[in-house]
Length: 253
Ligand SMILES: Nc1ccn([C@@H]2O[C@H](COP(=O)(O)OP(=O)(O)OP(=O)(O)O)[C@@H](O)[C@H]2O)c(=O)n1
Ligand SMILES: C[C@](O)(CO)[C@H](O)COP(=O)(O)O
Image (cartoon, rainbow, N blue to C red):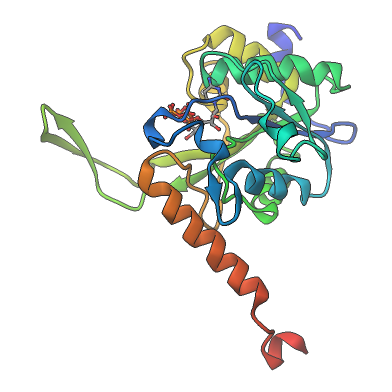
């Protein structure tokens, strides 16, 4: 796709398909676990199994591609690769892993105008409803968008450990995933931004475009630090308990 095409709004979504791309090649250094955090046990299954289950249960996806580190066979070994494509082309940064995965999507039949939902393996609380919410909000959008959470706390600037300013927070959002953009513009934007960019939206923004912000309605935090495992497990167990609870007479009616 040319530069001109990158800046052209896409007005039709009729032929476009939706693909999920899940970067799963990180080391999880901040999580402090023995081994990559995405394979740690959480509510009875490897963390990434929850992520994959949410995408597998989402209608309307043409395919799910998981990008793992070179030589990593954990998904196959644990029987988690049956409903997904796995490519061991992960790179040294998240952006490099996503960039490599976009290349693989072409070999799976993805077309330049198809939508790609990039989602962190480590965001294991994602639900089919949240994914569908983003798809519905962005399918007819010219740019695409991302799940993001409006800030809940007062926002400070720290300088040498002391507050140097308090920022207006009403226009601040915490970026989450999935982040959903069309394949060719996303590939072009990531190539232009280089491996240091921390999310897809940043690369698209650097092209002068404004991704849509879509609130997730429900927890969708990334397991990053040691305490996050217990928090994520508590959310997953609470959801499981809610599903197992007998319906009230009103719900059953
Ligand atoms: N080279 C990398 C780095 C990250 N990721 C993936 O990108 C997602 C978000 O990254 P992050 O939470 O930062 O994971 P890690 O890089 O694993 O964590 P850390 O920075 O603490 O090492 C994760 O699902 C991770 O597996 C990836 O595919 N390739
Ligand atoms: C993409 C992301 O999840 C948006 O919040 C996040 O940036 C990924 O984590 P990282 O620590 O930047 O790799």
